Length: 229
Image (cartoon, rainbow, N blue to C red; front, top):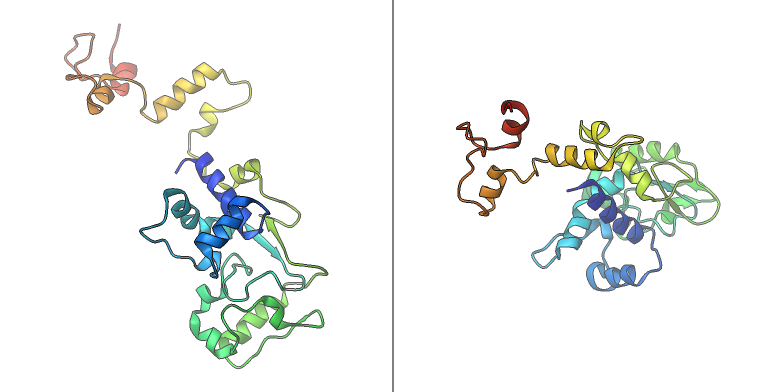
């Protein structure tokens, strides 16, 4: 998936988890998510291409979210990835829900009392969770979701810096680059020049013999590295 496509799809996921007041988010909650958690929705045969990709990028989205827990009323205790980008049910399984005797759709507020964590401790996993959350401060006000670090929100620039880059990115795009030259290089790295081997693959031409009559098949490597004029 191209980086800019991934950034655009991550934005859709960001708008859903931050409950942005848009018609698209309301439609997703009403028609696609319904009474489920966004993090628990499954991909089905009926899922559209765009929705399928939003769901596929949930792990990438979760890894870049930072939760500030306030009153705990907006964050799902078991299903939201509010501890180190992983949902508690994903890390410990359904058994921890049964051990805690706390319903799966409960909010984080149920384990907060007087601005302190109040976890049940009747299993080893629950004691481990209590230790993990002991390091998380409870703040005044409602829960807030940040991008990558506290105080930051989603932006294409911020996403661009978190996505993995190809090895040649600095060769093609750099300060004061010449657009025509960089575009030519970009086509080269993607093997997208209209050479005869590519055109034959697309069914545009019947043969891909080099036009310089050297007996070789025309390709990008042949034209740039082999042919001598």
